[in-house]
Amino acid sequence: MGRRCVFLIGLLGAVWLLASGHGGQQPPETAAQRCFCQVSGYLDDCTCDVETIDRFNNYRLFPRLQKLLESDYFRYYKVNLKRPCPFWNDISQCGRRDCAVKPCQSDEVPDGIKSASYKYSEVANNLIEECEQAERLGAVDESLSEETQKAVLQWTKHDDSSDSFCEADDIQSPDAEYVDLLLNPERYTGYKGPDAWKIWNVIYEENCFKPQTIKRPLNPLASGQGKNEENTFYSWLEGLCVEKRAFYRLISGLHASINVHLSARYLLQETWLEKKWGHNITEFQQRFDGILTEGEGPRRLKNLYFIYLIELRALSKVVPFFERPDFQLFTGNKVQDAENKMLLLEILHEIKSFPLHFDENSFFAGDKKEANKLKEDFRLHFRNISRIMDCVGCFKCRLWGKLQIQGLGTALKILFSEKLIANMPESGPSYEFHLTRQEIVSLFNAFGRISTSVKELENFRNLLQNIH
Ligand code: FAD
Image (cartoon, rainbow, N blue to C red; front, side, top):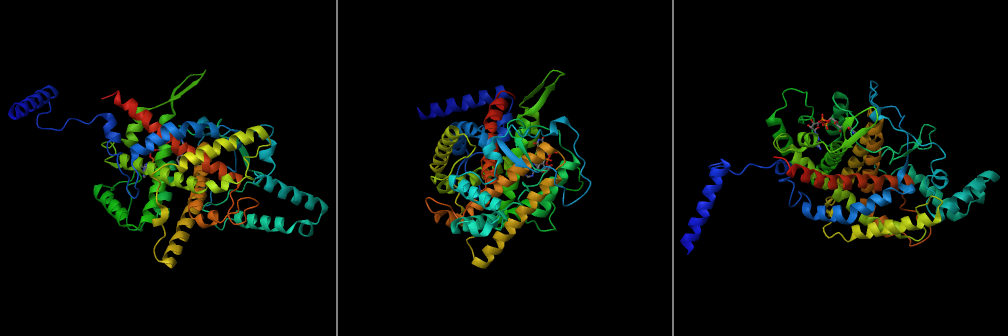
């Protein structure tokens, strides 16, 4: 019986080999496997696996998050797109129509949002009213209650961003404008070539804790960047401490996310009447196929999951801040604001229930002096990257680049403020830990982008399964 079974299996195997023409070889990988087969199972530096994230994100989180991001509170983002590039002069503004950003007319944005950048809670509103009244009376200092003075002072200190990972955009500047994110979606713009590479190059080469001597195989036009350098780069990366490796992986994950988006919302067809946007499978394969990218693509997709886990973790940590009864998603429309807060809390509790969160306790856990130095370096590198966004020569890319860097910076700030969040009073003003409306909007929208990318990977996987 046993022998017959072995014989049958052998026979079937031989028939398969003959039929497929692969005598002695492994079955060929499908297009989907070439992008995704290495993007499965456990993620380096994390205890979480890709399949669990996919299920959780695509079916439980993504639909609700999209709904929240469509609300007035989250769709309007104030940004200064006219800040000059602090690093070089020769920014060639991409003249493509798809790079243009249409700012909001002033009557489009709800008054509640326009009136003050941190006007999002009842306490905040009362404090601001007190301030405004005091200002009208010309007696700011004396007429403010002690509590108000203390809170405003703390908030100003906070907004001066001593604990912030991003260069705060100058939203009080006359050049800062509200942008409706729903009307200016992140998608293919045609921004590419040396100008775009220069930005990515500066980010990786100068801001990713990389020793000068090791060249990264980054610029596709550069000659002499071969396999050996690539290997050196990765052995260097492996040798890094977990924090520095994490920094590189966050940036690479963000880069991957942007490139997934532009492949998923690609300009497929343009007539004088309309434009058709959709999935461009070839574009996706060129960026993420294991063979076409010599193994790089799947690595980048893993980094996308890494940034997902970091932002997810930050959201789970900041729940107490949003749970406070004073907190409102203030737009001036009471009913809608209350509904949105309920949806926000629902999403946050769902996130908290995710079983395999990233354990950030291993970050900065070593020698205290060393850890503080590393944390400071981390912050400075990150702030530098937020300034580089002013050098992006395509306004649409600049808008989403700034928003996502601010969102990631806010996530890091949350992760490093765990004690302050834990010590927050349940009601009344929170002096120690505070998030501005800008930070809240960027945090959720940035996470919304990464969540959409993870969902798009499922779409691409399905599309690729249909081709050979
Ligand atoms: P690039 O993506 O420019 O990458 C340059 C090099 O970096 C590659 O050759 C590779 O060696 C390496 N690399 C690529 N991906 C990764 C990764 N994930 N991790 C590590 N290394 C990597 N274009 C749009 O159409 N829409 C947008 O909204 C948009 N937003 C952008 C925002 C910013 C801040 C920047 C800098 C660029 C943006 N772009 C956008 C341009 C887009 O990211 C690409 O630069 C462009 O499409 C050209 O792609 P590429 O294939 O030449 O390689």
